[in-house]
Length: 564
Image (cartoon, rainbow, N blue to C red; front, side):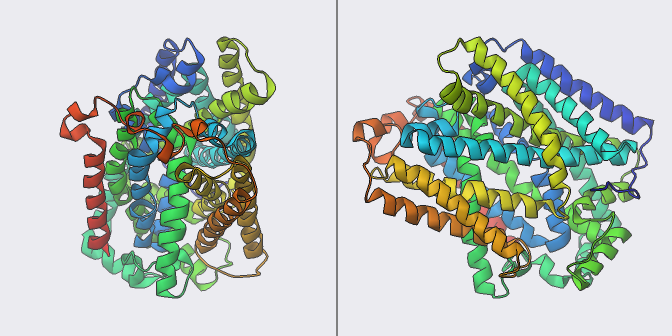
């Protein structure tokens, strides 16, 4: 894997000064957060004391890593408006469901992680499968963020990519090891505002240079892909289905239901932020508050990718070549670099420094979220459960810090796997179809069907994951062909269906847990008072989770209709 030798950002001292100032703030937050860490709960879950607005912004910022910034801008450059589905179909509905339905179970049961919930519901078999697959996935996804973080340092400073990756890893490692989840969350709040401050001017300046909105539309219509890029439905280029009806079904079921709900409702990276709040009501509001900015983030992420594809000569040539020959290799140019090329072309010095700080913030937020979730699951769900039980709390705090170092070192290795993909979203959606889709099937069935057995829990997970891997192998070996990210949608759908089928079949021949052991874990066995904050009725309207979720749902439906 080679870094780009031609893409070099023309940064001046003012840009370097802004980036250096940002790093000082990040490390300062880590040092301040260290003072609050006196126990493992402080390190892993911020002592369950943070307000909902802080965790709500952190909830979104944790996802504003490589997936959102580079991956979605790459998708925008390649597909256009259909990329909006990752937000309005593939995120917001699942976030609202998490807040309204699932968060009371997570928070009310006082679990410290999602795998711990699995252990209480299904026993050690499903717990071990979930904890191991989650840990592996976090190291792989942290590598994506680290690779792109190193790429920024490479194009900014001209360092070799391997040096850039190691330096980037050390910076993130420093503040997570110092302050744990609190350092990650407060940095994520800072990073949210830095990211918006970087991407909003980039979008506005880019649109101005493209001739405003009318000029932008004309240029996109005349580019490879044509006017279809300005319509979100049916999204055939994104889904890989040539049939319009199948494309809509693939997007709604594969992305909108299986991949989306699998990611947002069972991914501990996100759930961990809500668990750090002070009450059930605050925990429920966390993903719902996050849904509001999530709706509008595509306007400053997807649109710049599209602008880059029609405005930047290197990106225009690359897109034309790939459209003519899907096997074309772009040497130094890939869709992942759409945002960097646009920044180089349109941002003046000073704003370029803000833009660079925003990208660094995004990748650090993403990697820190993965690492902080990994160290919690490794310490509580693997080490404490299966290796060393009943040790003093300080022992697990030390294990968590060592796990942080280990995960960062492992992420340096996985960063170079990520570099082999021209569109990072292809890689990430593949990982999500392996790990998140079957987990969601097990969760949703186990939470609403008390008859489901512990054996069915782990067997469904194993067979669901294996089926997704089989679909991936069949696609890679050309047994079936599908463009776009449709193969990941298919793999996710197959994994979900196989998991459900195996779970139902195994449940028929194995023994269920007694009803008394399912209180707080299964909907029908959990009294209403355990699923609700007793003080919620006295909250003002803007703090009531169900009302906030209803308003958000109306807004996201309106956005889907308006954009079409």
